[in-house]
Every structure is written in C-alpha cells, then in structure tokens.
Length: 409
Image 1 (tube, rainbow, N blue to C red):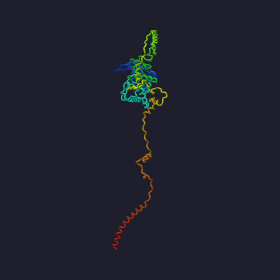
Image 2: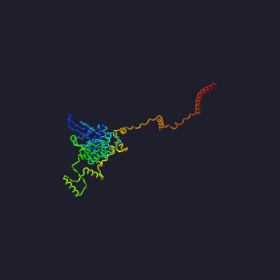
Image 3: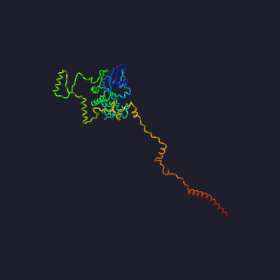
Image 4: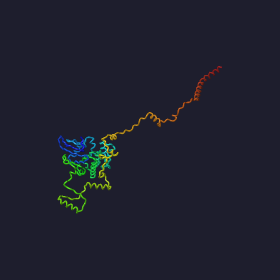
C-alpha cells in the first residue's frame, strides 16, 4: 500500500556494518524513524560519522538495511517508476573528466531516456542557471571543485525530479555560489519539490530548511521546525531605526525598571550579505573576471515546476516525461531509413534507354521506309552483260570453224 501522506518515511531503519568475521561492528544508523512531508525542505544534520550519508544511501537503495524499512514517494526507490522521479547530488561529484559540461548533462539526460529536443532545451537552461554557460565546452576535469559542484547540481535536476536529495550541496562553493544554491532550494520548494539535504554548514541549513533532524551515533537526538528549535522564548529583541539620545535614554530607563539584564548594540549585517553586495557592485561596474559569471539570485528554468499552467508547445517539449509513454521515445529512437527508389516499370526502362544521349538514333535511321521501286535499268544492264558473255563464248568456236571451212574451200 502506497503512502501518500509523506514523501519519505522510515520505520526503525537500521544499518549495521560487520567486521571480517561477520560480527556487528558499527551501528551506522540505529532505529531511525523519520517523516518528511511533500513540498518540504528537510535538513539531516550531524557530525562526521553520525550516519547521514548512510541514511541517504539506504533511501536511494544503494545499501540494504539490516532491519527496518522505508518508503520513498509512496514506494520503493529501486522501482524504476520511483527512481526516475528522484534527483541525487552526492557528496563528491563523480564526473567523466574528458567530457565537457554540455556532454556531461547530455549523458545523464540519456540515462533518463529524455527525448533529444527535451535534453537540449534543459541542458542550455541548466547551464545558464548554474552559471556555466560560458565554460560549457571545457572538459569537466579542468573544473575547480566549486564548478564541479555546480555541474553536479545541474545533473541532479536534468530529469525534473519530484524529490531532490542533496549531500553537502554547498561544499567548495564561494559565498556567491552558496547564496545561489540556497536561493535555488527555496524556489524549488515553492514550485512543489521535496528536498532532503545534508550539510555541515549550519547557517545554510538555517536559511533554507523547514524542519531538521540532528543525528549522533546513528540515532536522532532532536528534530522539529527550525524556527521552533531556535527561538528563545525567554528573550525579546527590538530593532528600530536611529532615534535621539533622549528617546534612547527613556527606553533604557524603562528596561532598568523591569530589573532584567539587557544589552543595547547596533545590529550587524551578515558577512555573506556584505560579500555578495561587494561582488555585485563590482560586476555592475563592468569589471572583468575569468570565473563564474552567474547572478547572485538564481533564475530557475520554467521546466523545473511541478504543475505548469497551460503549457505551450515549447513547454510541452521541455516538460515531456518519457517513462510514462513511449511516443516521444519511439519518435526519438526510431531510425529514419532513406527512401528506396521505386523499381522502374518496363515501359519506363525502355523510354530511359531510348532517351539516353549516347544511344540517340540518327534521323535517317528512323525515317519512314518506303517500298523499293524496281530498277529497270539495272535489270536490263545485267541481262545484257549475261547475254554478251554467252554469245562471246559461242562465237569464238564458230570463228575457227569458219576459217577452217574457208581453207577447205
């Protein structure tokens, strides 16, 4: 039975790593029970070795639990129908160093069997979104760690996932990139995505997560809404614009009458905000840089949305899902055979042979043949020749006889 209330739910999930002799050695995850709602940003926190990455691998089906069970998107994450709806960004980006950024995203798009038009549209949108459009043709083996994390995030989004699992997403990023990823996570949640992230940078988690769970020794030590866990209900904070010294004195006197401890200081801006403000100013002044050229605020592509409103033709191509139907896949994978020439008919062959330049018949050969007229002169001449030959043969003996007769006489 599929669970539709939670995007992720675990039931006493446990993973024990054994030693060489098969004896229980390490409880990486111990009786973990979590419920993560749909359309929620959930943070899984804890020191090194607390079981965060092991938990993610269990949820993705990369490890088998020792005991307990889990559901992801209402089913088993190893099911292809569920797996195609998950995007995963591991702690280390495992990329083919000889492929460039565009080829890398194309490779992952092919793994999800995305149609060619969909892949191309999403690749360009994602490269623009993570700020790698200018270096899209560079081999990823030459990327810095921060740039590799950016391309790793893009590959996790290539299939437009419903559930996005991020393991240390801001590791190696500069403050500008960190702010960009945080803005991206917030906007993805607004578009209906469910996000589970692990991070050691607690300030980043505080800015983006709705709820968190803190692990230690494989066990959940505490969990709840960030606001509820961090709010100090026994203290109050007032922030006002600059006021006169007289007004400040009156406020201070009122606080003293309450007989409580207090501290009046000027508020400080966060260093992250100050850094981004400085870099943004330099960019607006047109100063050149060889680094990443992305904006401080992320512009998410239109295809990264759960329910687009009245999509147009381009949106339909971009948001096409292949696994649910085979029409687009068949149209993409079917090879178009070149049209074979039709076998010419017998009459066409004859016409073709007769119309070849080298076999053109001379006009005299195709003139109408008239019946031959009898050649009277030729016949008479022939008869005359024969008669003369015959008579000449007969006359020679006669000449001899006449001569002899005359001598006898």
